[in-house]
Length: 111
Image 1: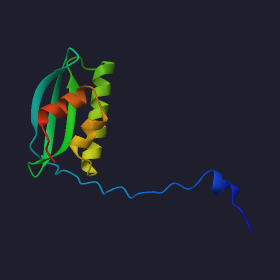
Image 2 (image 1 turned 90 degrees about the vertical axis):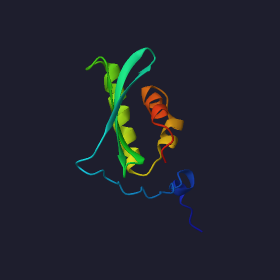
Image 3 (image 1 turned 135 degrees about the vertical axis):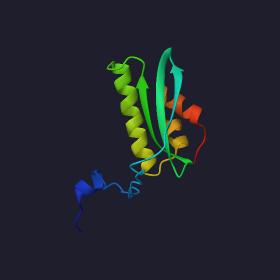
Image 4 (image 1 turned 45 degrees about the vertical axis):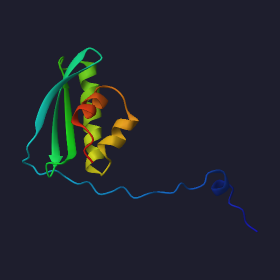
């Protein structure tokens, strides 16, 4: 009987398919709003699929070019990619904290 030591010690993880990315139209309406998190003011812009389900979010801090602004913008871009791959805003919000979480609070529970 042959034993594969590598497979026994390091089993192959199961791989799940990633849902295809649903892209927003090139021309789309967006809404902007301001909010505060941790004493810092931010502006968020959001767009929705069919006017209902959140499809993207962008966040700018009052101090452009600061590390805080860069982190908030990067988190929003990653959240947008998750939204476009079918992950709900509620699931994203449950997994994070910070300005992105505060912005998602203001948007509400859009499926």
